[in-house]
Length: 396
Image 1 (cartoon, one colour):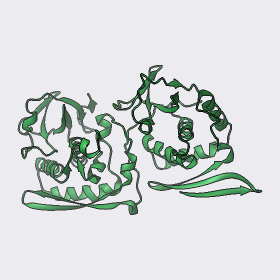
Image 2 (spheres, rainbow, N blue to C red):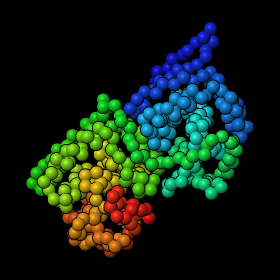
Image 3 (cartoon, rainbow, N blue to C red):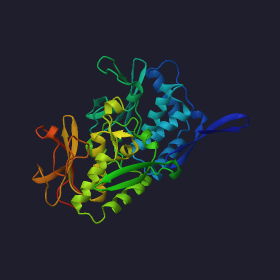
């Protein structure tokens, strides 16, 4: 961070900040009137007073900067929230005054048009936002038929919302009506110099393949507190441009001349054997789904991560219909070919061939199901149908 002070007639009029944000630099000026403190203990009154002071301050230039940056770089809501979060961190570092830091985040998210709410309980300031998606690991409350997800639960860890009474801070923010989306459909165009190179070796048949994939550590930061979104949102998180350019053209070159089914087999075995396996409990101490790009970056990964990467590769290179099969302790993918192979899966009148992207006891071919799962029931949790073909994508 670079901080400059603007001074007029010996009086501090504004503070100017500048910080790197993925593909660009975000510069903003905080007017003196928007440098608002929390008066006294955390309470409904102190939150209302903060809002009143901010509402009457000259906050509009900073809000305009945020929204202009969002539009310029086509930021999804989740990425835009990271911009707001980092802006609030510059104004009021969370380690110095967490409540004030949270109020700044809430204020600018709400003023950006999102239906953001606050709750107070046990000296905690809980920050919620309306969301209409299927998120499975974040506390929420319902009001007027809408669901409000807890955005700052990672800062508190687990909270027993049954025993700990959280009182809503009833503050009306005009225009704050939009639902917030966790879908990430575009990754930032990170600066090329921020990438590192990862060497990936893989053997297919009698030939060894070597990849030099560009990966960016900033991706980890983007998804550090990313929740458990539905499978459609999860599988369709794209690669950033530099990572894409360092991997996809090479894969296309390697499978050039192969039949479609053999090319998919190549991608299946690349995903299965080019990366170390480790379950999430040992790797992270908890369940954590990695996006395709995170899987490329990570030292090791499990079945969720492999399926996400395999799905992305098949979709990008062949764009074939697919279904995700969720077992009690495993997930795998099945692909629709012109003619099914092996023990096919019948779903909605169409046959799909299982493509196991995670190492198993056996060296499975397309259409073979691991012995541990042959007699285990599963759910189809996502169906992908390429645009332009009959049918549609669906989530179960």
